Image 1: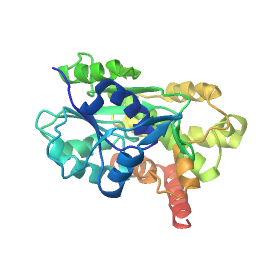
Image 2: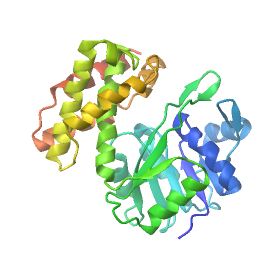
Image 3: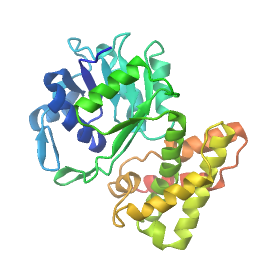
Length: 303
């Protein structure tokens, strides 16, 4: 199986980092899906990543000429429903769909809309952020992706890996993708949300004992819920993450804190909101997420 044409829906801080590499590899066989004024802006100005200008091909939702073998979703969760509609004309029954959105719900949402297509789980790790100079990124990290179980790699997963390898994008096919997804979810739900509430950078989670304790309490709620759902993450994973934080830029800011500072909508509904909903379904108390959700929603309402 070979992928020839790739489309990306979402051209923000994360999408641009990987689009920069894919467009060099595929040229006109790579396209960004965008409509209206956004499409025109990308055509006219492109985007700058670490000072490098990229000018990808743009396909509007109404276009029917471009057909994608692979579509990569890099939008925010609250933009996903529109993104699903925007790609209708470029998707065939053989198109592979890959989400690298935060959270644990996006893949199932896409699968519901495209039940006949292969829809892969995915996540990314990078420190990219939008600044006055454009997109800045000191660590591209990697994309982790695959089926739920990749003990035997499918043809579709192998084909996507070839695309990333050829574009020199660091990637990993995780044998247990559900564990990888929930590990990242545990981190997002704790650090992203607590930083948004407290306005704290990464360094504060190490230096401030009270914030460190709060981080641990929130992670424990996610771990308890994951175990209830049969996902293999434990307190040892929380230990691992806590120790790894010494490698973070102490002045660095989470994506949700950046959203709060820019007075943008956050993904609290897909972090705390998901934990609360799944916790009620599974009979798992989520008091920390209950309160964090209310606080972030309050902050948004006061913009």
